[in-house]
Length: 193
Image (cartoon, rainbow, N blue to C red; front, side, top):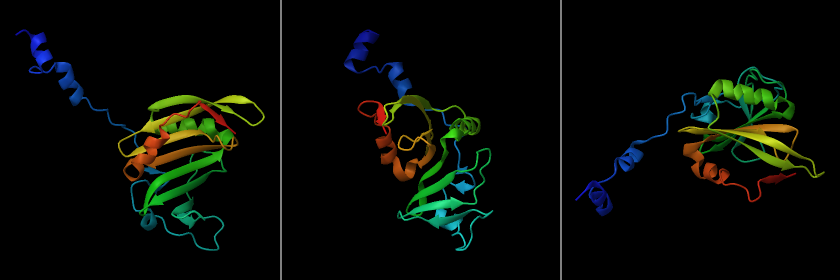
């Protein structure tokens, strides 16, 4: 039997099939373990204390419960290179961060995208969504996505509120099904506002 006959009969496995099993995605060298002082993999309720009741501003990291169960507003986090007006919210599952959402005014979105590229390298994927406002105006909304072993980051202008941007850090071990759902393309590729 020649090599082709052996391959066809399943006795000889082509080297490309063996190589495909050995190929693994290269790790994301700049995958973060924390953001703005918040440990993304730790025990959030132990790591971040409750904010004192009468405090308006704080220099130390603390949390305030929101009306949504297992959701906390984080205060005292350094804004680093980002303009003022940001908000940092943690959504928990079993005491660990499922999602950490960093949001702020859309006039800072280019600066935030630059910060993310500087800190975490080039995105794994980028795409542009066409957004249509109620008045009929259409514009491109750049979506940046970084995917790692434990974490994904998605940055974009908020489709529901054009005056804000969102950066969502999602822990894969906590919410792998949510990340898969988010990857499903929309029916028409146009967001309606």
